Image 1 (cartoon, rainbow, N blue to C red):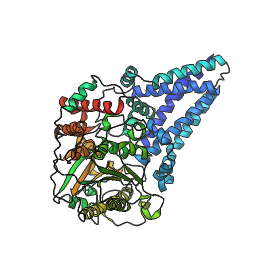
Image 2: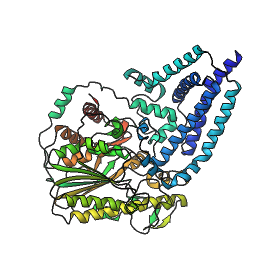
Image 3: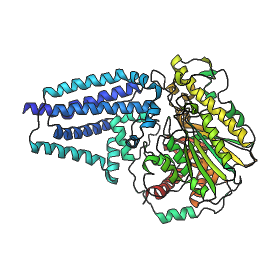
Image 4: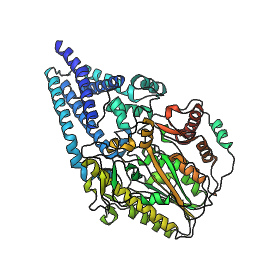
Length: 606
């Protein structure tokens, strides 16, 4: 009897608690966080581990073996989470299950730095392994065998009840769990953490994954009424602005593009890195827009989703990826590409890489042509990825082949994708002339700056090209998000740069999500556009000024930019003022809620 009591205490309290705490300490230490585990989230992790142990007991028949398997699963989860943070800047989400079939792109992301990254993790991994062995030995001393079929069934039943109760949330249980284990279903602490990896340091890895899972469960909005929504958008005036005619449109999503000249207080180079960007933005027929990205360091597909559909990703949970989850359904969804198609545009997309197996997704969005560039041909590459120069040559070739059509062409580059290490490029066109940063930080920034230097050259290539053709053409060039730059010590270099670490926390958060968009043309046009916009309204705003017929839905979305210029989960521009999201006016919050009801209507509701 005494042995059974000790086993129960060990299996269902001491060992799970120690496992959770040690894993949390290793996680925050490796990622340079200093955040205490939120107690209710700790309780949740304990409940989940108890459920897993009960199920394992019914299978293994021996409590010590169950603990051993739990430790192995915990180590695998830690490693998976850490590698994802290293290569994409974000932790593991439920949606990552959709990536399993895409081993080619996983191998591309891993690249040449896999060994060095693994070595950086190794000391922390060894700590986990040693602790796991100690806990297994502890469990073995009071291990019991569960031979009785009835006892095994009870273990299995209890474990399944615990897990199924947590993973099958309906509307009531979803909000109950969010309020019980986290900071509430309507949390207003958007400024307390500004990255998903940071959030996992607060809730724990298990807690963070489960929080994302809960928030990914869609529910019917309050006061949801299709007829009222139809009436709301049909009341929009049935006229476009028609300011810019009907030009060809070239959209360039430049991987992690950022104006490196803004970092001159910490690092200087022997030549301007973004010379073309900063020169052309001052020309006639050019516009520069400050953007707010929905993401930092990764998840380019969510930026594209905002751009092409007009939806804002703040409606969705942190780890939700519409390209992989929403578009697997057969439902027809609205998009700006389809709006252009209806007006006889020839729509095409050229990708330097495809991490999301998105051929079918882009087809559903409305693109008539899809081209994935060859990343196995060394002639096409610079570093481990397809060069920006090659991508833009392909765009120009496509435009030349389709001169007889009105074209909407979009491309996504890849050369500037993380990781950033000195050996990324065989040859550098730039040199660091001065810096107050350690050598490891300088090497990472040099690799990043070379990619941006090459991306900047493509702006000049496109500018020269469109000024040689007769057809009216505009170019929309922007970075999707800021880079997640790690040095060899696994430190985030942006955390050391003065530009991102002022005394103003709101400004710091804004700068982490702020990118710029450059728009230029080969003809005189007057673009009526805000100086700040979100990706969800960028293309919406421009297409509303083209001489075409578009749906009232996109006219209504364009109208919202008069009140709310840009926002993500953390910050936004409300009536032309930078604010935390929890500081938006009631009018703006209501407008966002109406946008979310329309998102539910067009993208979620059956």
